[in-house]
Length: 333
Image (tube, rainbow, N blue to C red; front, side, top):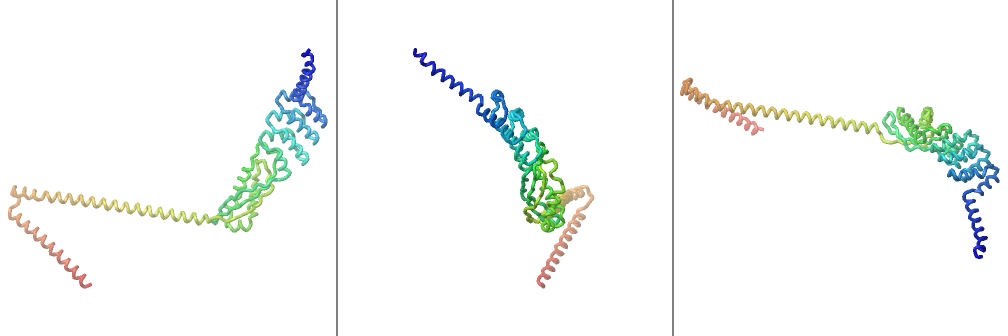
């Protein structure tokens, strides 16, 4: 009896649970919103999205937005783009913005741009409202050796056709910087650059720097220009210092060679003196041998000794006379 009394409560609970599960798994409210917006979609398609692990609202809401804006897209296109990892809502917003701005942009190209990692909506907005890119100070050296620093503002517009595979802002800034350096470097005098900074932008614009990039350069304006260091004078000073160091090194090399030659000559003199001493040491032996062999007599030897003593005495007398002459000259002074 008690079980029969609980049966209605159990049935109501089961029905409530079934309804909750139904509304959780099947987005009935989303389906009703789509029907109310005029988008014809089968509820089983929504169930299929659940089974394919697609969040239905991330596909249906952009589809409703596109339908209201008059953009021709279908569920399969949006769902495939979602499964590929794209941002469906941003792609639809970009298509709507392009349509309002009369820019020809297909869903396939828009999806390709989004999957390439670029912000397709920002690109469409940049096509309508150009962007200004400001470069840092770029230094160039004129022919007179003066450093000139220039800062440029680059007005660019997105090129939809080159967004996939085109170079980005860094490439544009690098190319403009190269053009500025080249223009300053070709100037005869830095004052010409200061007098007419427009010559930089005009010269750079003629180089076609936007080739291969995702942008179209509309204008290049020199925002600021300044004078830097006198690089030519610094280089000349450095060169003079280098020449001085080279000259000092060569002088030191010559001095070292002279010292080496002097030492070599001193060594040779010592060697000659040693040979003389050695030869003088052999003289007594030769004299003794001559006396023993009878080639020289005792009187001859004595006469030789007298001659040598007389020679030494004459040398000492001449040295004394020279010393007296020097002393006399000094006293007179």
